[in-house]
Length: 178
Image (cartoon, rainbow, N blue to C red; front, side, top):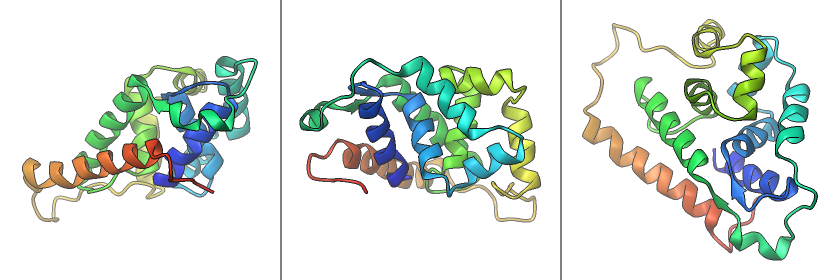
């Protein structure tokens, strides 16, 4: 997920935005390619190249952010809300880290932004995506035979640390992503 957030920062700069929004995170997922979110989109029949083009058409500014302004590029409230909802999705499936598939589910749960609009036009909603993820094991459902859910206090510590680390790494002036 850290690589995806780095790509999201790069995508924000490429599209001329000083704020890393939810759509930039989706662009980061698409740029990374080797993740369960992209595999799930493909399994649902979504053309990821068309998704990227649609997002670009809606968020592109006339001029990219210059590299010397890198320290000024920060996550927006929409990105924070998306990651918080992704953390909720992670908790639902007993995970201690946020995966790209959780972000995609969170995007369809919130339903805001260019990416969510595009996916709705493709007749893809939260339930349809979740069914496809379960069918192809892009997200493993909790089985009744598994141990009971861990206590919320036990999960929030690792998830809170993960969110803090992710945002800190994206905002760090010395942390560059390849």
